[in-house]
Length: 87
Ligand code: FES
Image (cartoon, rainbow, N blue to C red; front, side, top):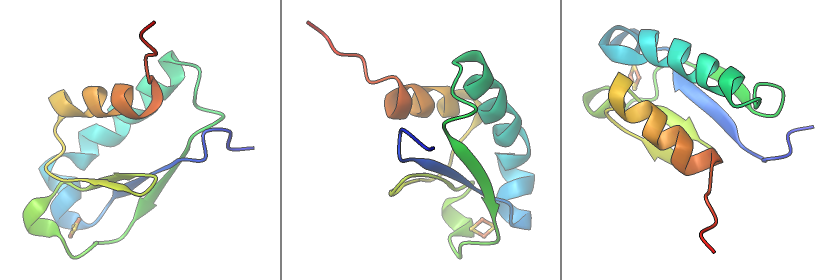
């Protein structure tokens, strides 16, 4: 089912949520829709990861991204899911 083998885990703990994940989740979902990946990539919420100081926390597969902002999230998504293969 999940061809990319990756799950996006968004910290929905109150600190991360209030500091940006409230927007990041929307951006992630619309980005996946725009790129036709919404059926392939699972997006799940998690409770506080104990890294509030470094938050907002977004995990993609095994990678943990800290301090994720509305402007960095699309770059992160492109990096993770649109590996461009330069000739
Ligand atoms: S609320 Fe996200 S790490 Fe604590």
